[in-house]
Image (cartoon, rainbow, N blue to C red; front, side, top):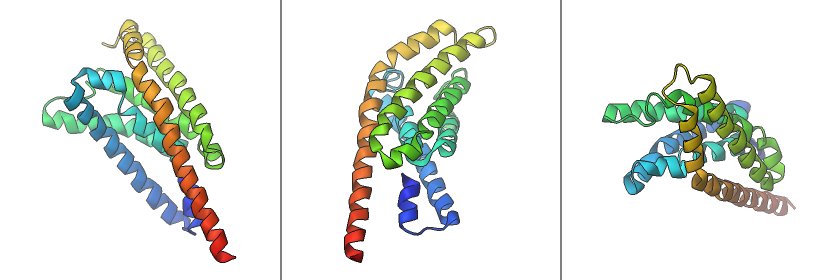
Length: 199
């Protein structure tokens, strides 16, 4: 969708990469900041229940595609870990970090694979989010099972975390497609205005 806007504005390939990279950095920053707000307002359990880092990754992937979605998915928890470690309390915890990076990588890639379709039909964001949730949360459980002998994250803990996060999944299913469809409408109206001006 963002690529469509940049093409409409006649941006060069280099400019497109620069803009999309800047948006990716902003999404990662939001993925770091939003969980802090939830933890301050709702306490430590707020992050596990509402999954605030997941929403920006899903949104960014739907808008920018799988490559940028993968970068957001990997870097958001990693940057959060580094920043919060310097502040004295690592989030996510070190034991959870590789699982969260892998899970959000899956979220970003799967949702991003729908980006081209979403640029044409914004309602496909629903399919993008639901597919990413199923494969992403499933990958977390499978990874915890495969690494149960060497990891502090047991499969039962992973299942409990997935179960606890259902409110966050519902918010994602509503919020991400809503934002994408609003942006799609704005882009379409802008394109229509340009066409009328040229006529």
